[in-house]
Length: 458
Image 1 (cartoon, one colour):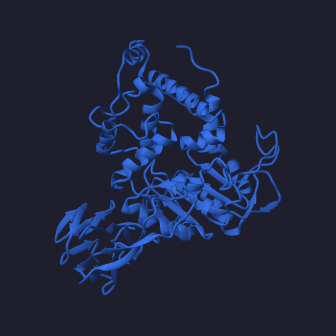
Image 2 (tube, rainbow, N blue to C red; image 1 turned 90 degrees about the horizontal axis):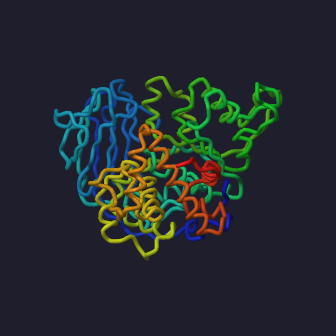
C-alpha cells in the first residue's frame, strides 16, 4: 500500500493546477420523435468527461424506457465538427437514416433509430464555449489529449467525495493507476490504498480474502486473517476486475457495501468498516447484468459515478508524451527516445494500451540487443538493434526442442530478471522506489522479485 506522503512519489505527480482555456465546440441536440420516450431531448456539447451513453441502464446519461433499447445501446461524442454515434453491441441495432451502423459521423438532420425509438439529430446554432484544463496529468495519470484533459476536472471533483466509482476500460489503460490517483488526491490519502484483484485469487478463497476469516474456519486457516475491507479501513479499497467476481459472492459484497459491516468467515462478531470503494473492470457490466452474470442491484450500488478510460489508440498525441515519460523514468541513456523508435511507437495501434507501451520502452532500455522478443509484429514493433548475442540467445531457445509455452516462459523469465536487476540497481535496491519507477504496484513488484530469487537452468 502506498500513501500520498510516500517520499518515493515525485511531488510533481500529485500537484494539481486549475489552469484552463476556453474550449469551443459544436453542440447537438438529440430529440426523441417516436417511441415511449417521445419528446425527450438531450444536448451533447463535448464538455463532459467522456462519451454520452444512451440506453436503459442506470449507467447511461440518456435514459430510455423503451424495452427494445438495450441497457447500454449506443454512445454519442463530439468529434471535431461532427457528432459520432457508436453502437455498443446492442441487441436490436442502431440505424441512421434506415442503414444499420456500428460507428458513424453525423452532421445534423439525420434520424437515428435505437430499438423502436427514433431520434432526430439537430446541430444547434453557434458554438459552445466551455473550459478545458491545460493539465497534462492527474496524480499518476499522464496524458495531454483532449479525451484525457476532459477527464481530469471530473476526477478531481470525485476525489473530494466518498461516492463509489466504477472505472471502465480495456486491459492496460491504467485503471488501477487512476484509482490510486483518486485516493491520493482525496481526503483519505493518509489512509491505506488496498487492491483486490478478482482474477488472481482462487475461487474457494475469494470470500476469505474479501471479508477475512477466523482461525480454524476451514482447512488451512491456521490463524485469523483480516480481509481487504478491514485492511482498507480509513482508506480506499479498489476491487479490480469486479466483473469476474462469482455471482454467488455478489450478494455478500452488496450487504457489506450497504451496511459497512463485515463478518469474517467462521466468525460471530460484526466489524464496522469505513472504506471508500472503487471498482474497476475491463468488461461491460451492463452486458454482464443482461447475461445474468452480474447482479443489477450490486451494479446500481457501485455505479454512483462512472469513469470510462479511453484506449491509447483514441488518445491523440499521448504516445510521444508517455513514451518520453517512461524513457526518463526507466533510465534511458539519451534525453528522449530515438526519433526512429518514436516514429514506430506513434504508428503502432497499441492493443495492450499504456501498459504495453511501458513494457516496450522498458524492454528497449533494459535489453538493448535483446529488446525484440518477437511478441509483437515487425510492421508495428519498435526497432531493435539486433546483434549476434540476440540471435544466439533466441536461436538457442527456439532450437532447443522445447514446446512453445515453456520456451516463451523462459524468454519472459530472462527479461523480467534483467529488468528487475536494472531498476533495483538504479534505485540502490529500494523496492518502493523501484516499483514506482516501474509503474507497478509494490505488492506486484515484490511478487516478481520473489519469483526471481532462483533462476531456471539454461
